[in-house]
Each structure stands twice: as C-alpha cells, then as structure tokens.
Image (cartoon, rainbow, N blue to C red):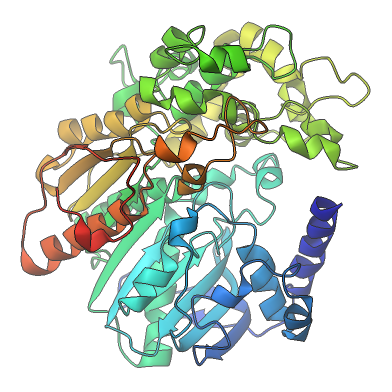
Length: 539
C-alpha cells in the first residue's frame, strides 16, 4: 500500500509541477557561439535562506511526504514537486546523506527548449558563489534532481553554481519506448545546460563563470564525456570553449565508427554493431546468461550465490560480456531488482524484471525507434495472464538475427557516440565490482579509445577496488537477489563518494594550479573500514 500511495503522490506532484510560466530566451550568441533560439518556459525562482527551509541542498525534503505530512502540505506546489522528484533518487550510501542546511541561495527551474531538444532543469546559485560552475550529467533514466546527495551538497558548500537536466525523459523508461530516439540528444543537452547556466549567471550574478567543470555518474558520466568531446569539436570550429575539465564517474561508453568498423571498410554494418562491445551488448549477454528470474533454470539462486566463485554457471559468459569477476556479487541483484513491484496492483507486469532485461528492452526500443506497439515483440515485461511464461525479450535475444538490430538502430547508436577526443583534462573513476556498466567492456574500452584517438596525457582512469555502481548498495539489504539480504554486504563493498569528491579535487588542482594528478591505477581500499572524508584520501 505504501508503494501505491507513493506512486499516486508522484503522479499528483508531477502534474502540479506543470504550471504555466513565462518565456525567456538567450539571444547572446557572442558568449560561446551556441546560444540563441533558446527558451526557458514554466520558469520558477525560489530563494532559500538556509536552515529551516533546507537550503539549496533541500535536505528537508528527503523522506517526504510520509515522514512529515504537515510540513509537506504547507509547501508551495512547486516545492512539493521538487520533494517528490528528490525522493525518487535514493542512490547514495547512508554515510553520505546530506546534512548541511545552511546553504543560502537561489534556485531556478523550468523547461529548457532548444530546437528539437527539451529538458526540465534545476539551476542553483549559492549566495557565497565562488565564481565557478559545474554542469551535472544525470544518472540512469532519472530526473533532474538525481544528483541531490551525490554531487549537489558538497559542490554547493564549495561555492559552485550548479545546473542539471532530466535528459528529456520525464517519463523515464516509458520515454525510451516512444519511437523518438531520446538518447540522440543527451550530449548536446549538456551544451544547452552550460549555455543556459551562463545566461542565468549573467542575469542573477551579473557575470559569467571564471571556470566551468562537468561531472556525472553512469549515464551522467557518459554525458560528461560527450560534453568534453562536443566542446572539443566546437573549439576546432572556432567557437569559444565552454568547459575547462570534467569528472566521469562510472560512465557508459558508446563506441564510434572507428571502433565498430571491424573490417575497415568505412561503414558499420548491423552485424558489426551486434558483435561489438557496447552497453546494450553486455547487458544482453547478462540477460541471457542469468535467465528469467522465475524460470526453472535461472541462475539467480541462493545456491549459485553461495558458491566460490559466485554464480560459477555464469562466470565465463559474464566475463566474456565484459564484466569483471569482482562484479559477480551483483549479477543476481541486477537480474531481479524490480521484481518486487509485481505485488503492487497494476504492476504485475514487473514479474521477473531486473535491470538487465529492462536495459536490453528500453535501449533497444530507443535505438530502433520503436513505439510501445512495435517494441512489444521484445518487451521485458511479463504477461499477468501467463505469469510463468518468460517475457519475449529472452526468445528475441536467442533467435533474432544480429540481436534484432537494424540499420536505424546502428544509425542512432552512432549519432551521439563517444570519440575519445577532448582537449581539457578528464578524470574517470569506476568501481571494480560494477555489475551494471561492465568495467572491461565500458570503462577500459573508453580508456583504449582515448589512447588510440584522443589525448591520453589529458586523461586518468581510476578503478576503485571493492566499489560498485551506486553507493546505496554498500548499505546492504540484498544478496543473491534483491529480496534476500546478505548481512556481509556492507563489509564487502567500498562507497565511491569520497573517491569521487577526491577525484574532483585532483581535477581542480590540475586545471587551476597545473598540478598533475596521480597516474591511472587500481586504487586499493579497505571495504571493512569505509572512508567518508575525501580529504583523508590520496593515491
């Protein structure tokens, strides 16, 4: 019942957020050559004093509405919408829950439109602004408040202005099966955010930022890479540079033509794309290897989890898919983690759904350009009328030629692909035990692309031992599947938050003081003694 009430609340809260506003346009093309024809509609501005109002970090909104309904009901509708969106994004470890309520400043929200691209944004300007800006990429298929605990509090405390968007997918997974190829815009949207933030800073602080950084987790890490790559191309064409450096935190990698063209004929065939390492390709293999959670032959079982190594029946196939052996701790979890929604009336279709089959489904639909009717042939959702029958995605992956990819899907996979070419410092970090974004097929292959096509002297890649994809998992609460806890989990994993903050400090020192950061390396950690203070780290 609590799940259902929360979902109803979110629908109402999001609807309340769609309030009429006034248009605003950036007509200043002289700053960076990318402005003009940009509008921010449904604009809402709110000033926070810090303290009782939660400050710019919105710490008072965590846990609402159920924890404090009187407080929630007293909030203006726009603030209720923020609270609802924030509470959909619990991806941080408990040790890093934001506690600073004293960050005074101004927030601007709205719907940013630039040509065919539109995304909901949040822009934060602290009262004690340090003159610098961070453009934040957005993880997963989440909303513009997905960085509230992982990036926002400490960057605001440092005095940075911040901006983030929802990548144009307010409906998350549903928007990925719209037939509109939303991923094609995720790189350019970072340029839009930077351009908008510059104009908002001129409007509200009367000056432009002295330095602009970019940082993001997961899909936000991918956006970080693309932002620096696109900016590099802009500068080569005579435009003014937007970004001075970036931190890519466990980013997904989309290889370009040079990497995918196996026969060297200057084209990427459907067969070449299907055979290559990619985000969807590694997840497809994970889907087939672990099998549907409720199938008699699923590998997501307590017995498989308890063996040494874990899930030995999946070991060679998962390593071949690009996952590190250390990530086996998560293979059952990511094969099952949405299964619990089937108990909510109206959500029975989630039976057996985990991140593996969901990613295979929604990204395939995005790249193929299929709508809900067309994508039904390979959906990951089960049929409530046949609850013991695996959904179509499994048969599709087993039998469709080249994974069911077609020319359109290859076209859109390449449209916003990573080049590995940038001309300002970028530091990457990824967990050695990342069970979602495959370390070998994603992080290390992007590093290879930088070394082959880009400027490796401007790049560092840190693999954090015993760390995973999102820090929430470090708190435990799961084991061989999402539903069966393993009490040992907290002592097996290291949260990455402090390491990400330390990496950002390395970037600052590199850009602002010409102090080179450590070389790329495996950073050893002690998972039984988690570090929460980034100042205590040095590697």
